[in-house]
Amino acid sequence: MASISPSPLSLMSLNISSNFNTSSSLQYPFSQKQHQPSKNRKPKYHKIACTSNDTNQNSPKEQEQKSSPRRNVLIGLGGLYGATTLTNNNSLAFGAPVPIPDLSKCVKSTPKDIDPVDCCPPFSSNIIDFKFPTFGKLRERPAAQLVDDDYIAKYKEALKLMKALPADDPRSFEQQAKVHCAYCVGGYTQLGYPGVQLSVHNSWLFFPFHRWYLYFYERILGSLINDPTFAIPFWNWDAPDGMRIPSIFTDPKSSLYDPKRDCRHQLPKIVDLDYTKSKEDPTNVNYVPNYPSAEQQIQINLSVMHRQMITNSQTSRQFFGSPYRAGDEGGVDDKGPGSIELTPHTPIHIWTGDPKQPVGEDMGNFYSAGRDPLFYAHHGNVDRMWSIWKTLPGISKDCNDNDWLDSEFLFYDENKNLVKVKVKDCVDESKLGYCYQKVDIPWIDSKPKPAGRRVRSKGKLLTKPRKSVDNFPIVLDSVVSTIVKRPKKSRSSKEKKDQEEILVIYGIEFDDKIEVKFDVIVNDEDDKVIGAENTEFAGSFVSLMHVHNKKINMKKNTVTCLRIGLTDLLEGLNAADDDSIRVTLIPRYGNGVKIRGIKIEFES
Image 1 (cartoon, rainbow, N blue to C red):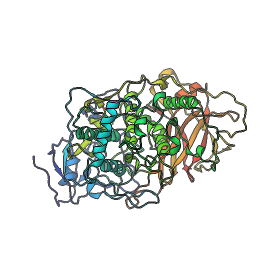
Image 2: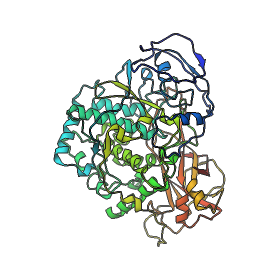
Image 3: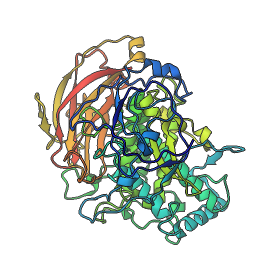
Image 4: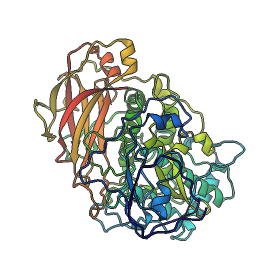
């Protein structure tokens, strides 16, 4: 079938009920319009179905039959709008998967206090559909601290060649770094939704986008050294042996080095997986002069990993983040990021970035993070968490919502082809030809423990005097506590297994030009010092600077939510039969944070 060329036909209202086939080579439209949601619309989507244990995610027809009633969509016939929205088994007729970005409308991104940055890729009018690679055996991504000299030499050479490519080559290191910028800092709008920004953070797109991103980055590196078996390393920050910046990235003469890193956090400094930058600022009221020892920090990190991978990841929504569908504009107060994206992903970005730079470059800001080779090792371990999570006993598995499975991205491959990929084709990493080196996972048995009574010391406590609040919304300008009524207590073991009790802090609103962090404590006592290693420490909300382009239709501030698992936490505190809980919010940094409310929900 020939490519569908742009057409001046007017929009038509179509009720689609059949499958469509298209050419693998598609032309980009010059101008076309598709259904655009009203500014503050709330789409009537079917309920998210993210509890399936079925690992075969290639759009079974049974799921189509379970979807909400088909809805009419306005689709401009012709060009890529018509072609891409009608491909494969599911389309906008069956739901609202996020479409590919509109490359023809890519705009400069605008980080805080610096000139707009051009993160737009080279333009191509031809797009091919992704095809699974052929391979003899899986590429094994190694732990960065365990690689040998031969591997290091090969990796350095591959990245050296990537950095030597012309800047306009889509395979170049400069262009690869721009990919993250464009997808994360407002470079793109959603194809068919003019003015509606596309962002892959703070939602269920976080894991699949970064998996695809690393996949093509790895393929390009391998092709440059003629080694299709080459696999990128992962920064093994979840285990004691890997809780430092890997030494292969610290040689100033190496292609793996980036000078824009925090000089305080170089070797042999242990990474803080729940890093609070205000603790290192003597002018901040939360300054903590006595740092934990290396051994203590390791134990804290292991407790953080257990909390985020198990306690706060019992359901797919907790782990992946909230649904994000075509036409969503952001700013929905009950939608937000998943557990691992919040912590340790974001704190490591901030811990690594250089605070002396204008906006925390390189790792400390979304727009510049891809400029540091360490970024790809960091996200290698983030991706590894997805692989591990699916193997944990008693945990929900991958989401089976078709809007997630059929969401799409565009990447350039090792042959400079612009490739359209779908989420459903990356849920099984083995089909992409790679796996991860087997190393110990010590955090599985590192369950946080209730705080013991401690004598007040002359040093400052982690908490300050608090005020009680009964009414919301509030501005979080001091430590506050509130009593939250539990809808149901004394649940049976089966009820706890079937539904997770979730603390939802919703309507979190803040200026995205600043970094924000606050901690959440449950049922603490005034005479106890609560740390991230304690059961009472429920989690943290943390946000990286991610200023978006304001020329498109975006709200002034970011609005999101934080979802925290309570079932294991309350059992650990012997509070499973209590009528209510006390929730304490401790602001760490970021002024003007508003919170609309706190509630408890149950999630399958």
